[in-house]
Amino acid sequence: MFSFILSTALFFLTLSILAALYRLIKGPSIPDRVQALDFIAINLVAGVAIFSIIFRTYAYLEIILLIGILSFVGTIALARYLERGIVIEYKRRR
Image (cartoon, rainbow, N blue to C red; front, side):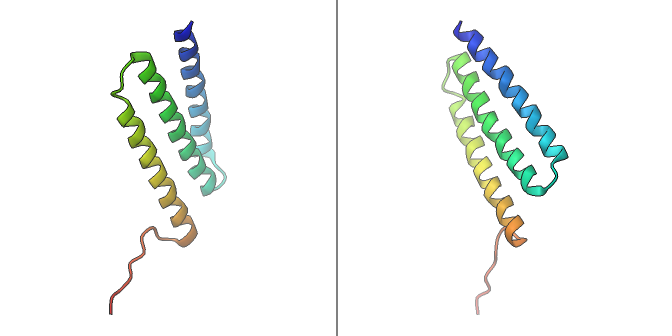
């Protein structure tokens, strides 16, 4: 029964990732596409966590942390780019 619930959760996560991919491709604006990328990353974290439970291993927890950190940094970088036009500001020393 527990494996059926996990398989069903993976199925619905796959459907939600496909819906987010549609929003990523057809998004009317760039902020919608950024939000779709963030949503896909969150669903990937959840999917890897379910795989970790199914295979009964802790090996995938590092992957979860890596995806989470990269997703956060990518979202911040894209938000700064949309707001200011550049990601990293260089200050000149005199």
